[in-house]
Length: 153
Image 1 (spheres, helix red, strand yellow):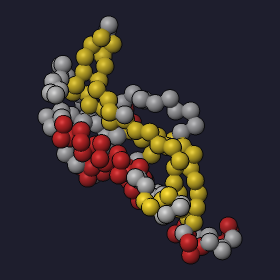
Image 2 (cartoon, helix red, strand yellow):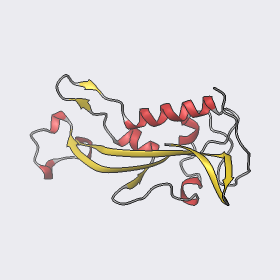
Image 3 (spheres, rainbow, N blue to C red):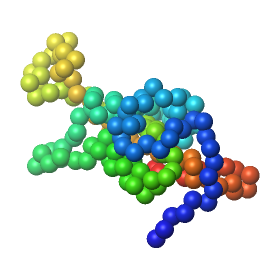
């Protein structure tokens, strides 16, 4: 199977193609997230960054055997890296991430502390729900007067 872009367009909102997740992290202050159109119905979700998911959130495990699950950041990084390999000549946007249903926890050493005794390092955070979209604006088409970009969800 070969994917061939329908048409190309230039955009000011997306930098040149990112090759790794580290490239994305290096431009956290890049204007893309603030200027492009929203891809989500926001409802009860909030925006999250790659850095937040990587540094502030835990990786949950299956309780019966303590086996690791796939973390949100690992899943996003894997899809992003696959997009870079499949579309090496295309402009790939920064992942837009929405999270909801946060689950607060604590590290095992803080299990017996009362809430007011907890230090920041004792607290953990995990989001029960996460959605993301990676836009590839250089692959687009005009359908019935609507400009559509390829999005990876």
